[in-house]
Length: 548
Image 1 (cartoon, rainbow, N blue to C red):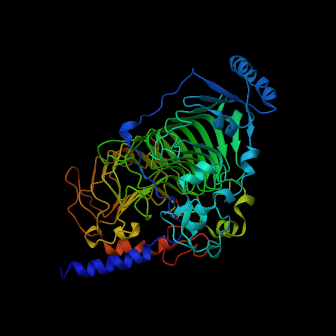
Image 2: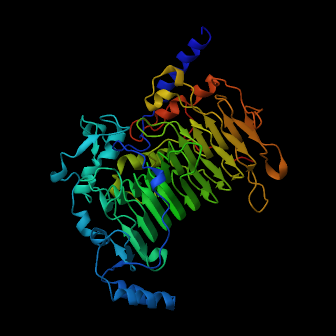
Image 3: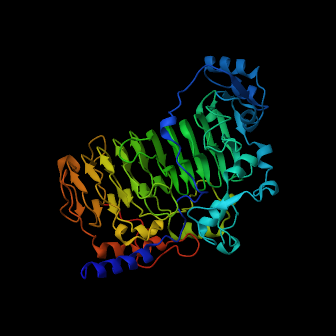
């Protein structure tokens, strides 16, 4: 005990230094996992009751379609158009309806007219998870529209589910809200199993909030929702948000220009992200946060054929548990992927049991934290920004493929990493105090039993050399972490810090970590987009030189 006590004290100092100052990963009302046994991934349907939505210029757009069969199909649908807003079709829908959206730009003016907050729902607020009064997280989640913490007020409150039910368009351009509060069981009663899809090419249906709403589309306890074949843009937080929903699919959708997240699910299960294009997000292109229950027994969310690029993070997920990511590409972001146990209040922490395999992580070197970008983001209100100038809302080590910050039982295998200038994969632990857990026996309960096998570094798919920085960086904390079968260019050994990595299947014996490494990262997590853009002693935000 005499030897451990000083170490725990040092760890406490590190935890205090590392405590995030910028933005919580995803502050929200207290949320709960659905019973996954009662749900299922919804299937795509081509028949069944439908409601058709169009715009005044839909006919002109349809007649310009290059494919004759698609033109004929859409002209036939146009004859039955009964709605000029997607929200009105959702409001009228019965369970199991298909909502067919004809070519056009959908701005949803009736939804935009609703203010945040709405007077009739002003008393429908609850204690918020993960946001302290006056913090940046409070402002981002409250939709206050100010970047000044002094404007946030003193009460840590968030819109309740009842708020979403009664004032659905206060913060959402399009809201699919399914659990009738008269039957408060957190299961969908109305507007369940809706399928909402564009009827032409992906780019022919554009749903845009023009940064006027927190969420462009929110599915809240909307079990069985299937979203497909359109472009969505310009949220003030999330372009598509699936919340407490049991069964969902996001398929063949382009999400661009979100202030925070492109595609986000939270305390949701039985879900699929498929064939998505996610770009220009201030946090991440895709975010499967507070992931499914059934730890290490199942993968409740599958992410496949996703192209996430030109974001701050290609992928992130606080408590991103039970997620299987494969055959996807994360490139030209500041960092390819992060999963973590950072933010207090997120259900399912510490993060565990995700699997990333057969993905490409490359060229994640976007220089988003330089002085010029800092000045632009500080001085330009969000609604006045160039949408292609990403303003980061979360701190990351620029030039990295994958960062696992406090995760357990994850599998990273058969992926390719090239042209990430800082390095391929980083693993470090996060003290339990970060998530509000103060039991000293749980201090070192993260970064255990992670496996890194058969990954390829420094080599493009065509076999040409394109080096990363260090292949693997580990802070040397945790038990059962192992590395085997990984290789560099044309079979060369991988590079690592430490130089020797424990092999699978046994992996590392428990060690409390290299405190010099922990402390070397300490000030980086004090980054704040307004008040501390260049923490002293931190090199995360300076893009490394290209390796040779």
